[in-house]
Length: 250
Ligand code: APR
Ligand code: ZN
Image (tube, rainbow, N blue to C red; front, side, top):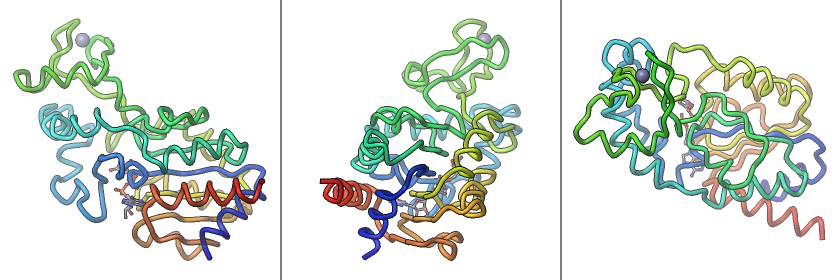
């Protein structure tokens, strides 16, 4: 049974690493980007989430962000996040590399979280560098579109996330690949694995000898390399794996 097999692999691991995507936060009420109900089926990411489109007209980004705002700001860690934090506490997970910008792994209690695409919890003015909490901007979006910088009045108030066409945070990327290359088990959860370089990370792990566990609601192109594939909701699967692991430990 794959959940049992995954639990055994993680119990025997000394350097397991998780790579997570939007699917791990779906059960916290944050819509995914692709797959069933994904937001990129409603919007063209190049038109609303690229650095070029942002510099041309920040309101294209902010109109979508305003709509997603309440769900993202209200989101709390779900049992899948909590299970990954429990695995780290029990010494079965070295770290979480995430594509998500919602901060829910940190809220759940994971300490080593590498945010490949930055954090959506802060915004920064591209004109004067002033930073502000994203939560504080939400209340102005009804009458200020795009929102203006409270310090200089500039209109280029950008979340501290990586937009399409923007450079990745090089230190985070280097740390993520170093963890992957040292991993003996790579646990991929809730990602369609279509955005690079994040999608390259599990390959790097497998190339360096790691065994792969994929927990995803839909097939991914990495399934063919996986030792274990668990088709299901991470909010149910991850706690099951964690429970089996603590049973094995007792
Ligand atoms: N449990 C497990 N998997 C799930 C769940 C769930 N509850 N709900 C959805 N999924 C799966 C979907 O089937 C899909 O394969 O999670 C995957 C989410 O894929 P994406 O929405 O493409 O998210 P992600 O892989 O993180 O996207 C990568 O793309 O738009 C950019 O910057 C954005 O970080 C994002 C990147
Ligand atoms: Zn400013």
